[in-house]
Image 1 (cartoon, rainbow, N blue to C red):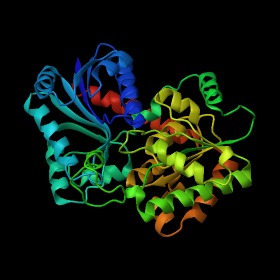
Image 2 (cartoon, rainbow, N blue to C red; image 1 turned 90 degrees about the vertical axis):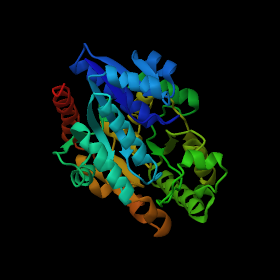
Image 3 (tube, one colour; image 1 turned 180 degrees about the vertical axis):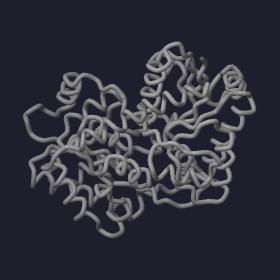
Length: 388
């Protein structure tokens, strides 16, 4: 059995790494004989890390050959089918799926994030992509609703596979944080993953190219400054109320996203700067283990929340996209997501304060909800492999 994985592969995006690593582990568990090939911009590194064959992203000839040799092309997981970054994204992924089908491979959508698809061109491209697929799974109920309106086949739910990622050893995580300057002194840790201010608006040029072209950075706008100030104030209040140490875990540190720089700016604006530490972690398994040491987690990035959920940590989401609400709905904690616009434009800091108070002092997430997600991933992978 030959499986080709087409998924997100953004430089420095630990969420993409978590999905890819977990997906390969799941495929090997359910189909040990499978020969896996991954399309990536870092072929040597990914081949070494995962023990898979690789195709360099952008090498069209090699990609077409890999598609022809494959029994199954997996498209996903991750938030591929959306247009809140660029109107070019959905046509790009539609072209990939159409090429795979034309090459003779079976194509399956795997734990896809779908939506928002605000523009007619995006919806047309998604509809074309879905028609190539023998099976279509999406990662949350909101994605399922969007996809089903555009698909001519039943859309199944398969949660984000990153929730199944095997974490590093807790001792390794503690040692890593101690070396970074966070002592294991028994004080509660509030984990934080932040994302820059990127208001959703129609754009052709993806953010990483906009930066190279020298276009205005939304984080430098008045709204971006408000985001910094309000998060700094919020975290100061949590230090004062609960005696927490604030651990920033930036997960997308490429120049176009720069979570690490934003975390540093927020920490510098805190009155209790000495209680905050920024620790970039480039390994998804180690990141997951570090989230497990937190008393609660505030996530403006999706995958740190997923990894923390897998470790049984109470969550609060600062959402910029419906995927936050969809994931929270799977766990039965839909009320624990605040849209970042509410924080910046409507001063939703009071609600975030209350949610963090509850997360730091209340019970952990329902372990049965996390177990159901993990079981659903296993069932979904079994069903997927049955189509070959």
